[in-house]
Image 1 (cartoon, rainbow, N blue to C red):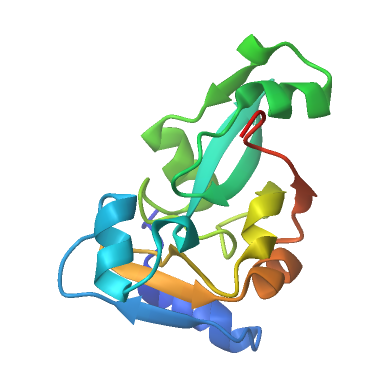
Image 2: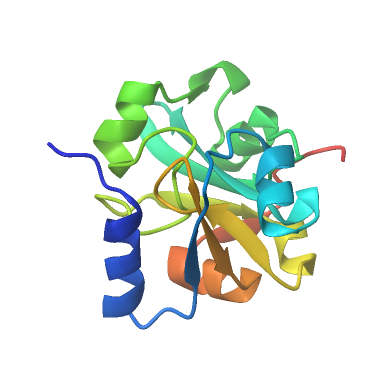
Length: 160
């Protein structure tokens, strides 16, 4: 099974008439800081999509890149203990989403993923999420990200 990439995400945007833009950058952006610098944005505008397994069921957590995602918040939502919320391995991320860790967008995956969106993202005027490759970011409005991802809005950061 071939991995998905920025071209696949671009095709998903076009087919579904999603007003977002893939920004292809000259260098990889492995950190929130380098991603923000590359697109001239604030670090809180960089959005990460992290795949967790809750009792072996995939759940995508979408939050500002500077935030620490609280596994307890996810556990409480699903009525399980915190230890039953595990970070997906890179292999599981690839198998379930089609994308590599560090390049994953908040939608457009190989299969639909149950998604949770941190409420702080909706305070932003625009966001930059994984663009399907280590040197690509997707510029999108938070409202559009919410609409397309069909995510449940909640406090994913806990005490922050």
